[in-house]
Length: 275
Image 1 (tube, rainbow, N blue to C red):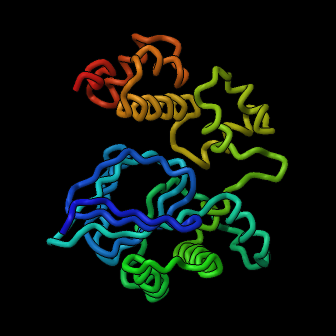
Image 2 (cartoon, rainbow, N blue to C red):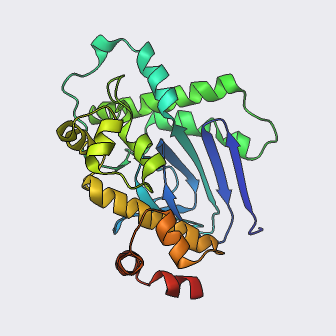
Image 3 (cartoon, one colour):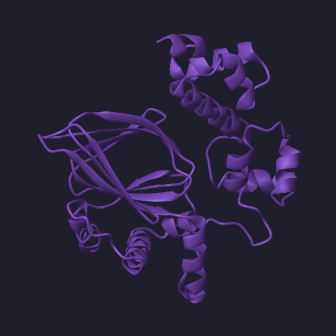
């Protein structure tokens, strides 16, 4: 077998194949993700909590969760997985077609960001095994088929837990701007919490309350973590000075940036660049 990486992407469905070599990446998903493992192993590290997925296992990863993913072969089998990515637009369209009277009113969004689904469920096997032939074929699935698979994926989640209703349909009232979308676009800007709340159509107290639905971190800590992750990505790409990266991602003090970068990644930015 070769160690070449093969990836396929169709619409909002991302199919990825990785051969023998172990691949590690820092990943932040801007959409909710449903991942299914055909072979190999996916190790997900969420702030020290390790979850391993192997053949036939499936998990839901909530959007805005920064995780370290390690994709590798297992028992001599190459890593092979499929990712369904549910964009806000797709979920809004889906939600607008639902009969609202059937929605569980008692559903509450929990703080679980990585949800491992029960194994060997017929609906999960039916959804993902039907996509397997596209790994080994040059035939592109039609847009209509992909749409059906995305819809199947949503129903897999809705039939798993009532709490997932509140997670996947987590968009705010129509007049409010999505908090995470706004922060992703503006985390590097020097904005106060009051300004962020105002820009997203909320009072400060409502903003803080709504933010708790998305993260167990405070808004300030979320911003610091997001800036550090962005800095880490830029440092790994190379070609930039530490000072440039520091200010570009939103930090004002270079020594403070170096200190908290080391706390998160174990080395200073300068040491990371030299390594």
